[in-house]
Image 1 (cartoon, rainbow, N blue to C red):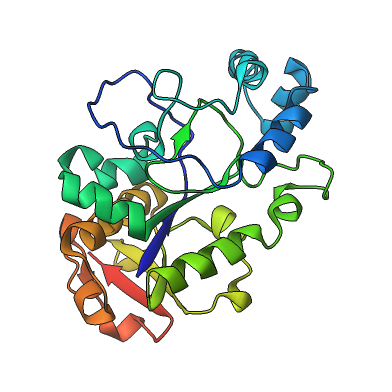
Image 2: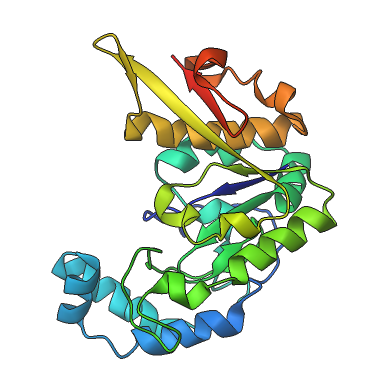
Length: 254
């Protein structure tokens, strides 16, 4: 199965690592087009568009101005090592063996507002562009219009070339919406993580994010290929709840 994750707002380009393998994002020309649009936006406009503080807006305006598609290990970093935050705390790539990393390169994808979709080894520069941003562009009024069917076509090709039976959705709704799910050639499996609070099971975002990353790590480290294996996931105290699950959605509770 191929698992998909959302990116994270928090980035780490400082922590050193010795991993040298890398690839280049598949949609460089599309990213260039978005960057050319973003370079025209002033600090105050960006603050309004993205709901950022003035200091964060200044930082990201500088990032857009300095962005270049000339990716190399001296100015860029592999995506899987860059993203931080709840999902990536759960993924905990620091515990991956080289074998795990190479497996992730085949079976893990990260959806991105700037890059469309990323493989773990794809080099990226610092950026901020969430998929839900209403950035008017040459293809429409937002990034969903911009990426249109490209992400869907890419995932279908990845599923076919890797002989994967399932697309495991571990992304947030904001990012999953960029996929035309009815056109995905294989079965999509959604996963919900519910925590019991006041005798009621509910999704608590803080915990669910870490659980999604943890499940992605579980799939990679155990080379999970079928749903029976996936149902054995028991990290972070979660367990499969058959009574709340169905053929399209697996529910894990704790």
